[in-house]
Image (spheres, rainbow, N blue to C red):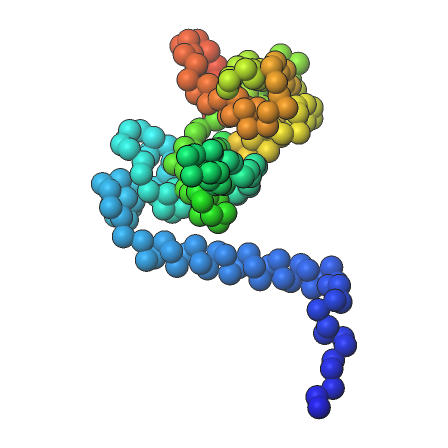
Length: 248
Ligand SMILES: [Zn+2]
């Protein structure tokens, strides 16, 4: 009878070093999987074919083309280091004539910590497909955050905050973002900290109205506020000022 090796019994806790190694291994495997998926990818849309031919090399060029973005692989190849986070996961119930039918709703946030952030919400009867669908949806909903330094107390030339006050809304929730001087950090609710972090904003003051306990609405309002930074019509004078700052 073989001697049981107690040192490797499953109950033993992993040391921090082993944990780090394991984490690294998982990350490298995930990266390999992603790379392989990109190599095997056969684009179905014009935009996808342009990516394969290297006609589009950045996300800004993609936005200029103004073509429908229907394949998440396009974003994978343009922004390979996109961070993903499951912000909400819920089991939903629908009452039908036959009884109750359950499904899962996943909300995934993606961002590159450098001015691009997206939120995707999807439903499925199974857990993993719901998360996968939401991740793809988030990639296709990616928005550009206009960054700058709009604080009169700071007046520096770096893109650490937002250029002006913005507001976003979702259902009853209103989120107002105000530019803050360098070193302030993110003064906002914990639920939307990730949205701002993923968008690459490091200093901002936040005000909110409405039922902010509704997590998903709160997050959607924050994403809307960041989207509005690029939607605001900027006067020529202000645009010159902002461009000058970007040049420096
Ligand atoms: Zn500043």
